[in-house]
Length: 359
Length: 278
Image (tube, rainbow over all chains, first blue to last red; front, side, top):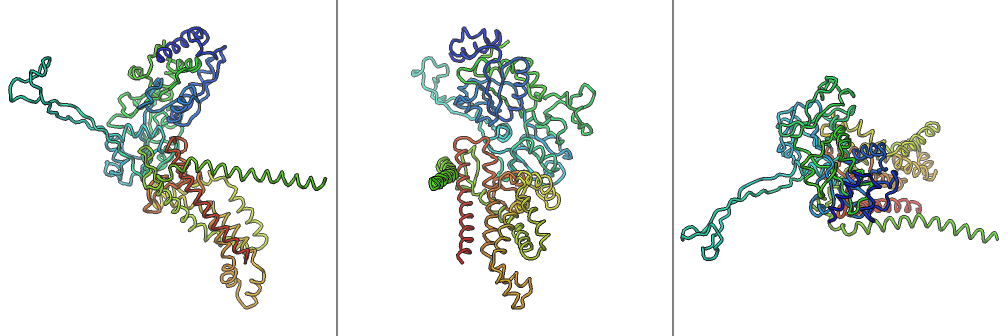
């Protein structure tokens, strides 16, 4: 029921603007008055934060209400919705467990980029290799066909959304195996409706095959260096020929920052080697200025990606809904894409906890 | 009337003085209230909050190793500098040194950290090996940061010695160096030890600079080129995302830190007090 009301509110906010909605919505949108409206308070993932700030600025420029964006981390984003401290919570990981009861919408996807020093000859690694590096089973670049030398592995701190995404996408190993079950078949008199009942004395069991997946979460080795921002990791990797680290894909292609090289994962590069409007091939090492910036494309086949999620409370304010509507609109989505995120797909929309009936 | 004014001003000063004590009491109470429930579970050797393990013993090892490393570099330099300033330096040079050392104390720790990250860490990586973010890098940065404490307190304790000690030694035919080594230094010993302990307290409590140069890995170090995490950096690096037990474990880390610093300060205080009694 709540979900329906929410969807209704959302579509109302979109179609008729904020004030037109107040008749149907009853008491829940008491604060709507004029275009200024109330301030929308957002809190949560520091990975989502910079994108939310860009969206908020554009939203305000277009006449929308003020949006105040705070950080705090994905955990705090979820907590702030539960205890009512924010209008919209931000999470950079998929919700799980009892968090799924909250109303959430996937706004875009971010990827993780594995980065190494530009002088590193290795072009890509498999997920298994990366996992082995972070488990310290592979400690020398020579073992991977690179220039021999100790691998200096760097990770994010515990609790970080980026680390959470890395642990989920790389360190989690899912093994599928088929398990055979011998199921005894009851004699015919016990089960009349059963098609497979056995009449003869010999066939007393049927063999079922069931696919079982076992999930193993491999811990990142304790000796791994820990740094607490995407920037610090890029800085470390840019200055250390033996280093490997991971950062948020959205923060990797920021022009003019220390050059690092992105690794392909499982033979798939995170970006198309697109040619920009000015005819410059991207990620050409000779090109490091701002002319390299404008055109690059995500490769949808790249496996290390994660959802960016907005969460709202049970009775979201019309201003908050209007902002979400803006984010999900073509303008908002194109803006996110131009900042390095992957647009929200049909698949993402199907996973949302309420039906999105936007325009 | 005058008496009343006296009394009133006394009361006002007392109330204001009480504020600082109350602040200390409130902070202490809060840290303990939050941290005590997890105090039992921080005594392990694995730190993995996502798996419910909150052992901080490797970080105690990290704090101890970095502090000892810093003392190893900083104490000889600091004491020599103090002796030079108290006994050997001409007046003019002393007047140059003192403000310079005060300036060293005034530099924000993030500046030390940044300098360490940009110069010390690459230097270690290129010439000593390893990733550069290491105990050595942290020790170098912290040794500079503890110098002002060590120098000023040691200098004061050498200067505070009765003049008769020095005059008597010189009158007995000792050279200046012999006087320093066998009369003044032993006599000022307790003050110098207090200076070293307070300097170490400074190193134990430092956070920002060491986050940037230590590498923050949670493991027992096997070499001085290994990255380690200290108790302070554990709080500094993870507070942003910590909730629930994780957050309580960080407060428990704070309690352990609190106890270590208290122990160091009480030791230093006892040493200086003993000297005054004499």
